Length: 445
Image (cartoon, rainbow, N blue to C red; front, side, top):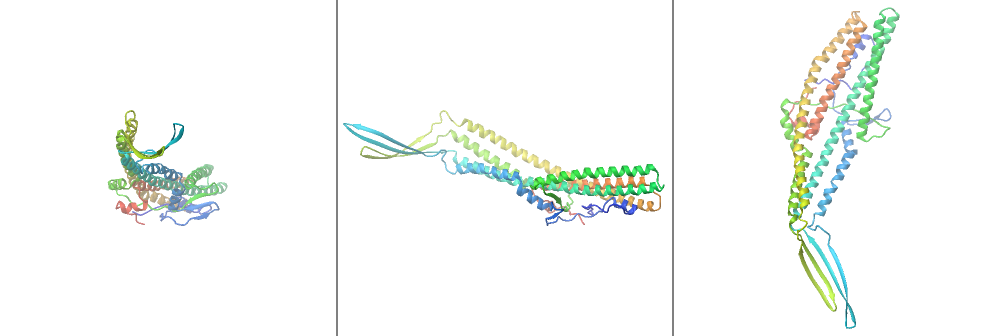
């Protein structure tokens, strides 16, 4: 399929020959190329980012990444505590007893160092802490995936808003030039007041639309600036967007298999289930007694003493009931989260593939039928205008239809690109690698 894209910047503006201005109202149609890699300043505080530059910066400055990195410290600390089978710290005791007999006074001294040792569940508790660390590390990776997708979609929103702003501004300038021309023709008696008023109304309507679209552009720029952590004195601008590849209708099964293999949140849920299972096993073993060992040293009168003691905690009142209940509840939650992650990935992949395929069908139909028909009508209108066979009101109607077709086409292209980004995020792969992974056919220039 021929790759047809609308250029990022608008066409010529006012005071051109009327037929040529009518023709330019549908914009210049050009192919979108690969993203620029350079970052430069434009207009003082306006900064142009390529797509990948924006994504990299968003991940670097994202508060979500900082939160995810901090969350790893909790299971790491738990794993550090579970390194040795000691549930408590050593207990060091010192005793001094005064001894009196037959007019003499002496002192008995005693040192005791004791340590409780977890016999049953220590290895399972340590292993569960390790699985929680892996789960959090996978969540950190998945946070990067989600932040990258948000940055790509925000970048796309701004790129689409910029294209719409250029189109509507060009249309407003053309409408004003047409109104000025109509005013001169009205003064010369070449057109009537009805036609003159129609051009005035169209100029006002086109200008109002351009201003509303500029507000949308400013909102999209503010959102991208928030994601990139830019200050109030800087405004982001976009470069060109990459071209999405064609996607086969039967790509869903392959995409889902790749997503299951690559998604970090699913790996995190699996590690969470393993951690919960091991924590539950450790909790079940908590009813077994812990061992307490002690070393005793001291002196009694003139005798030096040294020995040891051994004891067991008797699980008579505290038999680990609450620990088993908590562990069982956590295990149920972990298994439910794993099932939900699998369902969510399946839904994300299916939705992204369907939107991608349908949006591409709409884009091809629009490019081959609607845009070509609009271009042909403008060409015919130009000829008819030179020959005096078309009125000013006809020019307004045809121009409005052409501009609306352009704006709709920009939205369709945005939908295709958004679905492409969402499918890549669902599979946890860079968007540019989808063509090779799904064995799809890339659009021809």
